[in-house]
Image (cartoon, rainbow, N blue to C red; front, side, top):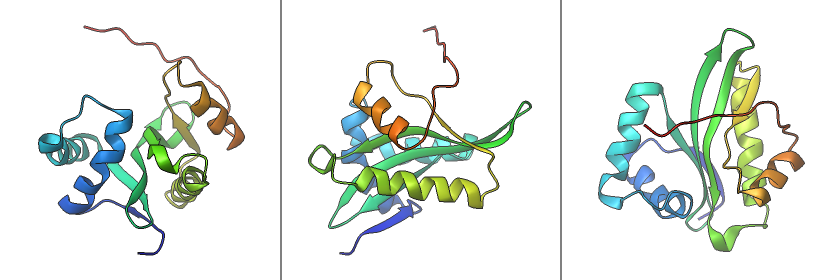
Length: 141
């Protein structure tokens, strides 16, 4: 199979993303993953982009939105490369594809939220041209 980047449209494509996504989100379960992604898609337009080369190597959860302050944006909610595929350029290739997708969709910004402990991921995002532009606060209820 040659390297390909796509949006997961079919249940089979979504399911194929599960093992990689679970590396980032270990609480997810295989038997509910497709329905969960479909529900998020129905509620908010969430979708998965993935890079495959002989199997899924990288996955990103994406959602488009719009702010009053700065207009339309594409948000990367999840971004993960399979453990054995990290630091081999696959993540950078998927990230660049997402940038092009955001531009094609008329977005003024690309944004993402990353756990404060994921320092290696932060270095990657900075190398890709992202800047720390806000604090994201949360509260468990």
